[in-house]
Length: 185
Length: 357
Image 1 (cartoon, chains in turn brown, cyan):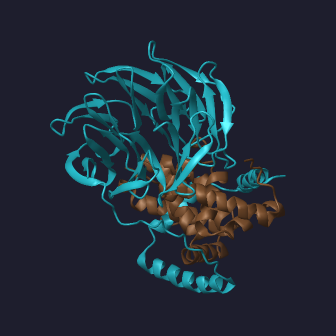
Image 2: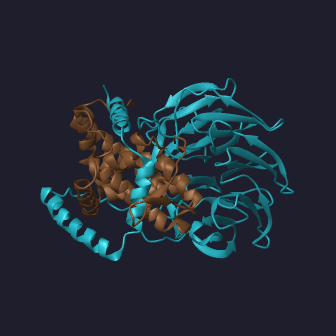
Image 3: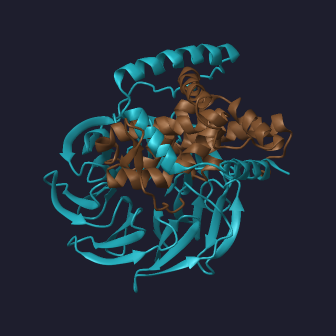
């Protein structure tokens, strides 16, 4: 994970000014460490430039609201990724988050993410067409560079289940993208 | 370009795309949403509902269901003779000459259970996240995954004797054989000399993760999955510390030795593969219907702890399933000794002593 950048954290107040925000130090550190990667994951799995940041924020908001409990988890980063991955891939919830993003973006700014080159966009589009858990496993494995065990922690399932998802996903991706899997037996 | 190269390029494209991402601004937005007043929330909800209708009109992608594991009813492995509270997160169990030992991951401790009284007589502090145990050379060896160390504990007194670092990667598998203690640390293989407690790391040209480790037929066996999804067994010659050969067993999981064979778990096919210890050839494949996790061979049987919480007993002579036992926790580790089967019940933070029926 990249090192946390020094930050002066402020939040807007009613008069349009801002004030210094006091956050639990551990949450602030956790957020700054993990946020960019969770945005990446959300972008890959949702395909939405505008919605990806919103999905990531929603995941962190849930962590923040329940920080006393989440901070005690051994795998806080896995927890927030699981929430983001589920938000990004589960039909209605993703649409709700995307809709919120649409509302905000109409009055705010352009997305923080650039469009992907066609070849790369096609790859992630085919990933998103996979069954939900396979798509999540592929994104975590490649994008996050997680091991099978780490992916299993994020997805809250057995390592064998992750392997099975990845094996099926790789076969499907190779077929649909007309690529060689590079596997040798 | 193959699939992995395409995936890596597409991953880099995602990373490069966040040219204007500002985490601090994102946090401000997050806090703004958290502090929103009720009227503002209602207005936002209305706007969201409207936008949702627009988004939904564009189309909603369905998600396929994941078929759950079939969990057959428990069989008749035996009856619970004792339930022994241990640490809050027991993960592995080991039977040694005088005692039963349990690794408690969250507490970083090792519990010594006296089989005569079914009570914990000693709790030893080891390293952070102890996940695997093995016995050898009068000691209990503990792989402390998070701390990236291996603890050596005196099996008779429970006193710590040494802490051996695995600096490059956390150790997650242990085995004893060829006058050494062996550990898989990431994709590396560590060989510990019990006379000096020094580890040497075998140069590895394999990239196996999440598999097993054992010593059989004059070779050290490593199993697992490569980054490209292949599942070979690599065999290392202890005389040279170099790779002797690779066996394409097709299975991916834990390894155990018993009944003149090597046994390997296969999580994909939910079966156990029986292998010839010399040639590595597959002798039999035994479907068990659940994802196998832990293997222990003892007293004429192979004992398999599965992710569903089922323990399956397989007769080493006939390859037949002769009993099952269900616990409510996941992936129960199993050990056999003192006339009993000892099963870690992760859901109840207990060690179950089961008398085979």
